[in-house]
Amino acid sequence: MKKLFIILLGLSLVAAGAWVIDRRIRTDAEIRAANFITAHYLVRRAAIDTLDPPPNDIRKVLNRSWGGNDHPLLKYFPDGLIFKVTPPGFRLEEPEARRISLFHSDRLVASDTEWPQWEKSGTKVWKFEGQEIPEGFLHKRK
Image (tube, rainbow, N blue to C red; front, side, top):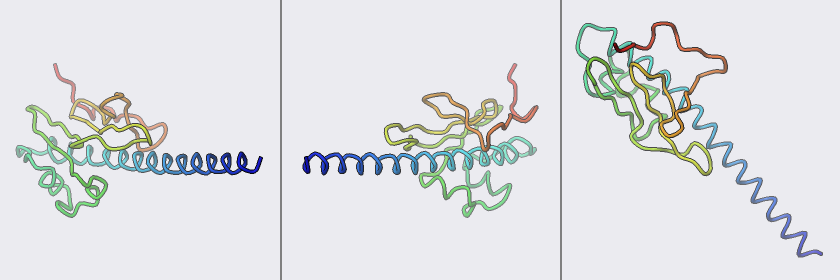
């Protein structure tokens, strides 16, 4: 009986630890997604709303808005972000998939025509509940 109790207690501790780790990973992924939305907005403003052609480097694009190499958004993306000019627009993405839960990995992608989303699932990401895509924010290709 005592051995069974110790085994059950050990399994409970392992399950609780896994839950805590999973919550931390999910929270980090939500924070990353919120900052990716902000980066997408700044990139769109800096790359599309100016008359100059956008540079091919995310740091130079962010430098048009503010911060450049020291932009606080980039601390959430230790591997950086990939910014590609795809005339007439752009594509912004994480270089590789990172953990979004204990058992799943995914990466964030967006473009001038697509709202930020998880690549594998296609689930759009939001900064807050009830957020909507601003009217006219995304370009519509003909």
